Length: 217
Ligand SMILES: [Zn+2]
Image (cartoon, rainbow, N blue to C red; front, top):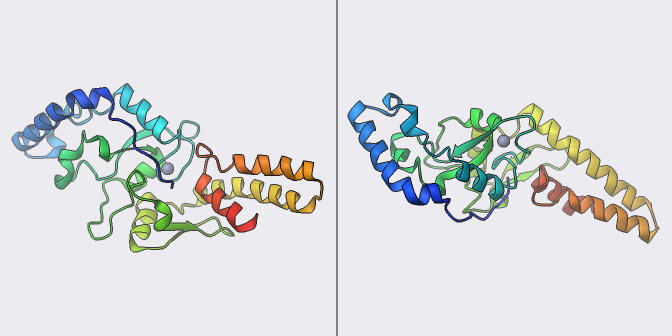
């Protein structure tokens, strides 16, 4: 999980969010609940410009697990504060509540919400204050109760995810090992150049790799 800067509100939301929200809240009241409202009124946020803005904002990666989206899972527009819960219905079309998420994190999180220790918002907070990585096992460790919520709700230590994280980690560890073995400045520069690319902000699991580099290099 990585801090990102929220970009400007997409035009479709800027022009329609207030009207869509008003209509949605009226329908929820009229029909007696969220689930009674047709999807067409609940899912107007699925606009091409919203998807594009979120994808760019998160560099094509899941806001929770930093997996590259689109290869092994479909992208989903994520409502950090679950839109189906009554206190958050009004945030269905709120740009500040929208994030970019892989289907696996999305399925894990569903409509879970912890009022005392809410999940960390990577657009307004620095996840590094709440979670860190065990550089040996590749697992995420909580530094704060809100980090614990984040790990649990997005299932950040699921087996397949830890394996994928470690696969990239092993590759980087090997490059660091090679770098430390050589005395040739040319080789050192070569390995260093390759290693830092794995910590680029658009690289998968870059937070984990950044920590690996800080620990071993
Ligand atoms: Zn994910």
